[in-house]
Length: 128
Image (cartoon, rainbow, N blue to C red; front, side):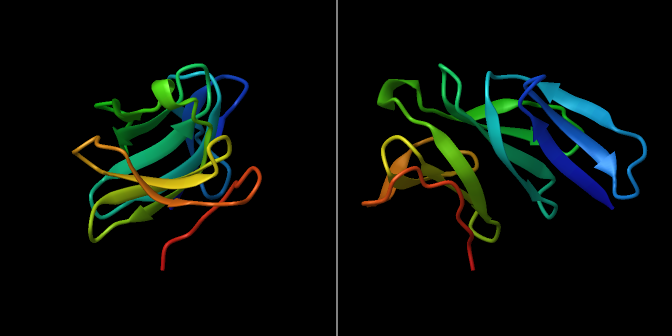
């Protein structure tokens, strides 16, 4: 078993064994990573980045094939929490700047607004 996490100091995605051994950096990318979710069925890791070029990023569990699946620069976004609808291959995130829940398909990259919230600085969401 592995624990995947993002490191805001080194702007990286890391993995470690659940006993605390063998930490490895899988990817160094972005400016301010926030949330990470793993899709073990399809072999992907997704994370949000709130830097000057906000985006949702995907890589394989090994760290290979890093892909920006949603480039959010134009909207002034601050993507925080990420959630996965694994059967339908959809990534959801909550945006702390626009107060929206947004989504895109794993492969498509077309961003859509699910709902406009009236909250301040949403940080986390989950899919059931």
